[in-house]
Amino acid sequence: MLDRAIFQIHALFGNRHKALDGYTLRLIPGHNPFAVDFDVFVFTTQGLHLLDDAVTAHRHFTHVETDAEPPLLGFECAKWIRDHFGSYDYYFYLEDDLLIHDPMFLLKIDAFNRMAAEQLPDVMLQPQRYELALLAYDRAVLADIDKLYIDYQHSGLMVPSGPTLRMNFLGIDIVFEPARNPHAGCYMISNAQAERVIRHPDFLKPSKIYDAPGDTAATGFILQALRVYKPARQSLAFLEVQHGHQVCLRMKES
Image 1 (cartoon, rainbow, N blue to C red):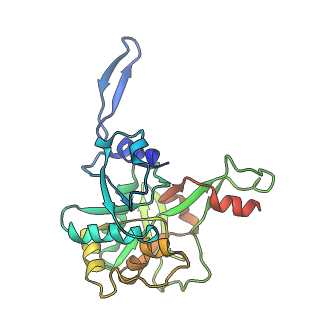
Image 2 (cartoon, rainbow, N blue to C red):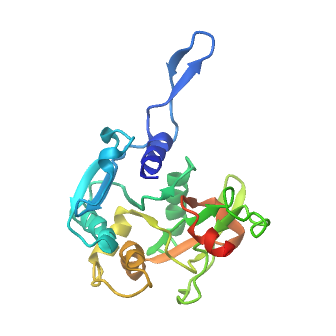
Image 3 (cartoon, one colour):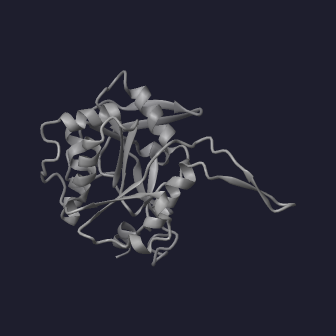
């Protein structure tokens, strides 16, 4: 899964694209209009990893080793952002079982940020995370589900107040709302957003916002400093990431 997650980033946003001349079987240089300059860092802890067995070449990422407790590894990524603040336009945290399939993913977040900046300077956009039911064990139980958005709502969390936002994207009216569940297993913050997060007095202070420590380490400190929005129910597919393991679908089956 980690191989796929890393390779997807390079395939979507990298420059190593070729086209095949079907007559001569020669490879022709291609151009990726969605390419950006980026670096991939893989964070591990206490030597507990399988990177030596990774199919993805190590030139595709830089290994960052830590001594953190495994559930708190997300805090190590946040510390790295603090220590390298100003080095990048955006900082993208992505758990190792998440896959991006949309080459316009970065453009959509940037478009939202530019649209929202005038109204809500402390707002950020999270994707909706989903699982595909293609390989579900019990198709009879899931016969009416193709895609399950697993982080849409969490009734145990207080939904922050805020206005509904709308954006026209390629002629489509997209609706955003305060996140009913801010967690997505990832986040992408700009320099300005990162500065707000880093300067918050509770930055990197563990607090029980979620039941799972890993979720708190990944999202809790973001929620303290920024107002998190997600695509609303009528616009779920606008910005999304795939959860590579069918954990929630299997819970639904049982």
